[in-house]
Length: 273
Image (spheres, rainbow, N blue to C red):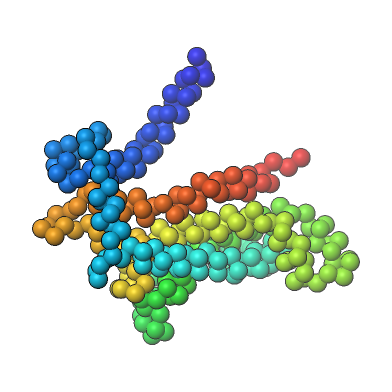
């Protein structure tokens, strides 16, 4: 009886949390005509026309281009954040450099609303010629991802016994060899976790994609909004739902595939015996 009650509570919680996604999926398989008379959960005549409309390439709409822009910028933003955060995290965890002042400052800076940085970043990117480029968008995503990557890696490296470093140095290993040859493989799960979180954060970023791109480097989050408007006015709810589902697939699939890796990394070091 208790087990059945647990499953009921779990099912209700899962339904409540995924209710918007379920509604969006159902809507994406309905035609505009059916949506006008049947906005409920049941689908009388399922159709793939909404997805076919989204996948068609035109002069104004190109979902494949938006996907490519988001993929490129997200890989730059998550990968470069790891490259910069790992040496800094090692210095903070092992040498204590900046751990009391710099680390809290970086974390608190991430808590500031990003809109505050909109105008100075736009002016700086305009001066550097990085507006409407995948590289420029990737650099912004790097800055956005650095605080979380730094926190994850500092905690992971701190959980590695300092005796490992000392033993390697006694055998003649330099700091670079210890950091990249010994510590990096040990904290590999944390590196992967930071990369995945960074990729998902970058993929879902909307503000800077809207502000810093116009046509050549428009990301998926911004490009998806171009599909909403109908030719006669109003919103094409079926097409809008289809493009939202397609746009959400990469981070969702990445999270599902790497779930065990993420959960293992986040719980590592929580229990020490």
